[in-house]
Image (cartoon, rainbow, N blue to C red; front, side, top):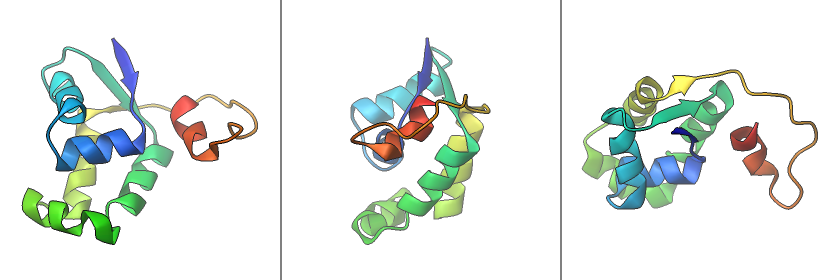
Length: 98
């Protein structure tokens, strides 16, 4: 199965347990193929420093750049398709859909 996860899912998987972590574990175990793009990695790097994640980042015992690199190694980087204008109602999802 090929999967492109949105940034919220990746943050949850990196910092908490549950379904999102199971998704990352499935990619580590090669039960799924996880894909990302430069834009999604950049978004992850911009979201992780938010104050609401600070305690979880500290608890992970990893720096934010290391968390991003860890995810980047787990997912195959692709060049997204041009899907035209942003997705109505949620333009942030355009990068994941592309």
